[in-house]
Amino acid sequence: MSTDTPQGESGELSIDDAAAEFSTLLNPVVEEESPKVDTEVDPPKEEEPAEEPNATEEGADAPITVEVDGKPVQLTKEQIAEAYKNGLRQSDYTQKTMVVAEQRKAAQAEIEKAQAERATYAQNLSKLTAQLEGAIQEQDKIDWNSLLQSDPMEYLKQQHLYQQRQAALQKTNQETAALQQKVQAEEAQRFRSHLQEQQEQLLAKLPEWKDEAKAKSERDALKKYLTEQGYAPKDVEQISDHKAVILSRKAMLYDQMMAKASAAAKKVEKLPQKVERPGTTSDRGTDGRFQAALQSKKELSVEDASKLFSQIL
Image (cartoon, rainbow, N blue to C red; front, side, top):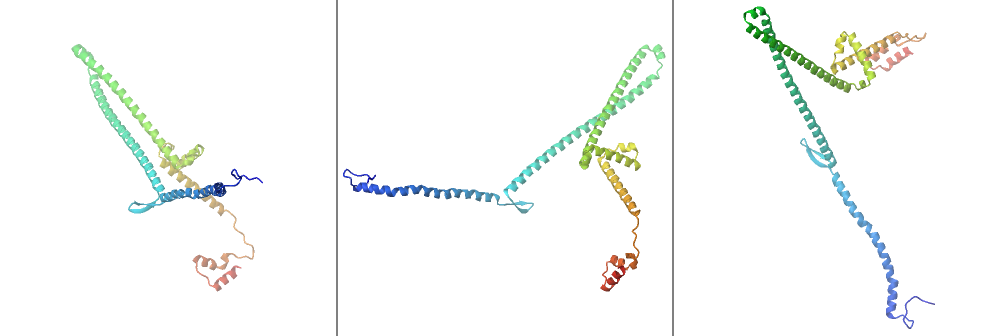
């Protein structure tokens, strides 16, 4: 029988060899199990730090007490952040609105200034035109032939002055006509802008009119309705206020509804009356006591009710 144990030269184990042999038999068990113990112990150590973020998250979700209009209000950090964002959006919107309002105000001021300057210029042109026309009318009274014979130099002077005044009058007339055309063009542009604004407000309050077919049908019906109410076709065509259109449409729809209700009521009146079979009695045959009792909402006694029902049946 052979063995793997180390032996000395004589074939017998020495004390040192035996000690080494026993140590190899005992130590491997401990060395192999020690790593398993480490792997079982390590996971709880890794899970412990995971609890800290949860505690932090709970702290983040915890409500914070803030004072709003003198009253304590509890809000989470998310709510505070959202309120802050909304405040920024509102602030940005308000700022943009104020900028637009200022720009519109400045533009309106420029328009008013230009209109005032134009009105002053028109007045000066009118005065100059009147002066030139008066001076030319006075010169028309001159006897040019006599003036030529008596004072040729004065004749030439008056002729030259007359021609200058005629040219100046022609120029002022041209300037006045150009100014009037410009004013009319600006008024037409303002009216178109007004119509566009009124159209936008009308569609905002009557979105169903975005359908062009439906809008045309109702517009035609509305024109006919207003004409039937006594408005002149020209006045109807000149309506440019969206509020007037909405009110007129409401009146038209109300009258149409009442006309349909009246027609329905007339149809009901024309329906044949219910024919009762012989031997039956109606509620009116009970001398009206049952209906009177119901209408007066008074309680009937057992005897009265029994009598009434016996008469009905």
